[in-house]
Each structure stands twice: as C-alpha cells, then as structure tokens.
Length: 199
Image (cartoon, rainbow, N blue to C red; front, side, top):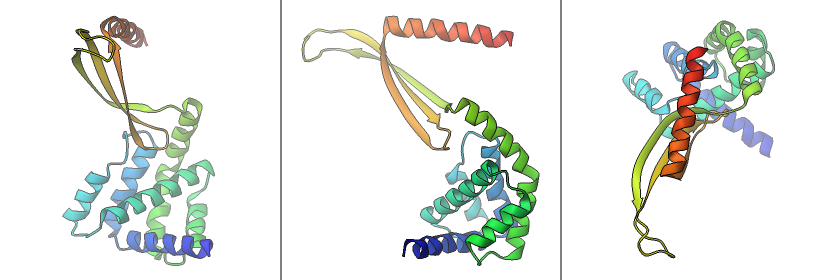
C-alpha cells in the first residue's frame, strides 16, 4: 500500500498547486527557481503565505510547505537529471494524472527559462557543498562563577550563526569564545576581508 499512499499524497499536493491562479503559481515557482539559481538565500514561506492571502487564496501552513517541498524536489531533480521542459512535463504527468494542461505549460515555460541556470548552480554547489551564512548575532557576556570556581569574572563572546545548508534548510549554530579567542577570530576575519578586497 505505500505506493498507493504516496500516489495519494502527490495527488493531494498537485490538487493544491492546481488551485492556484497561473500568476500565483508562476510567482511561487519563481521563488523556488530563484533560490535554486542562488539568487536568494532561501525560500521564504512566510512571504509566500502573505502573497497567497493578498491573492485571496486560503492555504494552511502544512499545505504550503508541501507545495514548496514538492516544487523544490521537482525542480532540483529535474536539474540533476538534466531534463528538458518536455521531459519535466512527461515526468509530472507520470506522477499524477491530475495536472491541468495550463499548469503543465506554465511549468514547461518556467523550466525552459530557468533550467540551465539551476543546473549551473547545482554544479557549483556540488563542487563546494557548503552552507551559506545568512545571519550572525553576537553578545558579550560575563561568566561570574562556575561549579569549580566561585569568583570567575571572565568575559566571553557568544555567537549565533544562521546557515542555509545545501538542502535549503536553515540551521543555527552557536558557540562561545574567550576574549583572546575572539581577538584571534577578529584578526583572521580582517585578513580574509583584506584578501577579498584584492579579488
């Protein structure tokens, strides 16, 4: 039964996608294609939800997330498989019989316009296979005491990094540094900045 359940899940997502107007579907796909081309740092589902509401489309969070995941996976696998627009449409039709012709034509056109750029970005990402820094927050703190020392009075710097992983998921990494460690970190960043200015 897993194949039947999977097919029903795909059909449910396809139904949700097909309820979108052509303009809203095109805009949704552009968000995803721009991300896959490396033009944006991620797919902002909150912004997309606002666009849906402005267009008068009621869509719960889970349905929106499923549409985003489905389209991301579709375009990402089309890039990795080096599919043409015709091949993409053929695969979509094989996956679900519920696609209306207008939606398939729109997806064909968008993939024909953006597919080469997505493939080029995928090649770069596969060579690098590293995340991108989206945000960095820091704070200066004072460790007053610890289990082993009553009067520690040691300053530290705490950093929180938001990183978009190659999969598109945003994760957070945090760490603390002593003042000498932070000064070395700062020195290395200044050296990197100087090198980058020469490029």
